[in-house]
Image (cartoon, rainbow, N blue to C red):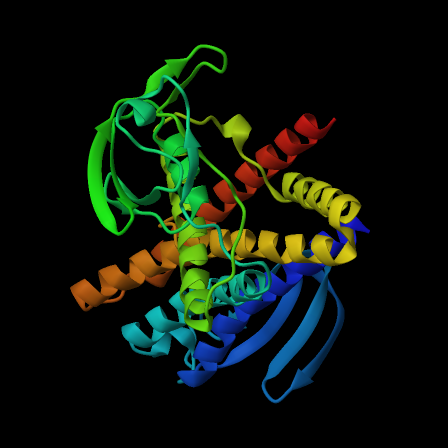
Length: 344
C-alpha cells in the first residue's frame, strides 16, 4: 500500500511538471507529438488531435515530446523553429509548475493545521543564547541576514551552518534587538550549539497569513534543497548520504505508518501532502540545475543563444545532453543501490 501511495504522489508531481511544458508549448504554437507518464513501452494510449497521450510501463518519470526538440525538423511548428524566448518559457515552465504545485499543497496543510512561528520556548543553560540575554517568548527575525518565518528555519539554519558565528535579530514586546553569538561545543552530542530551544507547535492565522505563509513554506523547502546541495558540493556531505526514489518511498512509507498509528488516516494523508511540498519544490530546484539533460542544462544553452544571437549546432548540444543523460543514469543507479544498502 505504501508503495502505491508513493507512486501515485510521484506520478502527480511529475505529471504536473510535464503539464507546464505541455501548456507553454501549446501556448507558443509548438507541436507536441506525445505527452506521457512513465518510461518504457506504452501500456495504454490514445491520440487526440496531433498529440498522443500515453501511460508507460515503468512508473517513473514522464515526458512532453515536442517536434524537433532533440533534432532537426523542417516543421514550422517545431521547437527549434520558435524564438529563443519562447523556448526558454517552455523549458522553465516545468520547474515553475512544480513550485506552483508545492504552494497549493502548502496552502492545504497550513490552512488546516497552521504554521510554526519562530518563537523561542527557552534557551539552553550555559550556552551563548542565555549569556546574551535571549529568553522564552523572543521571536527570531533573522539569522545572519536570512529572514526566518518558521521555527524550523531557526533549527535548520543552525544545522546547515554548524560551528559558524551567527548574528541574530530578535523581537521582544515590539522592540528589536541584535546579538552576535559564537557556538559552543556540547560534549554529549559533539555538536556546536548556540543554545536556542523552540517548539514546532503550529497556530492558525488569517486568510492573508495563510496565503503568505504558504509562499514562505515553499521558500523554506527551496532553501533547504539549495543548502543541502551546497553541503554536497563542498564535501561536507558525502554521496553516501544521497537518497533516491527507493529511499524516498521507504521514508514516505514510514511517515505514513507513524502518522496513521498516532493520528489516524486523516493525519497520515495530511503528512503525505506535507511530504509532497518537499518533493515538488525539490524536483523544481533539481531540474533547474545547469546540468546536461535537465531543464537547467537546456536553459544554459538557450541563454547562451540569446546572448550570442546565434543557435548552437543541434548535434553538439545533443551530444552534450546525451553524455549528461548517461552520467545521470549512472548516478541514479548508484543512488538506488545506496538506498537498498541502507534499507537492508
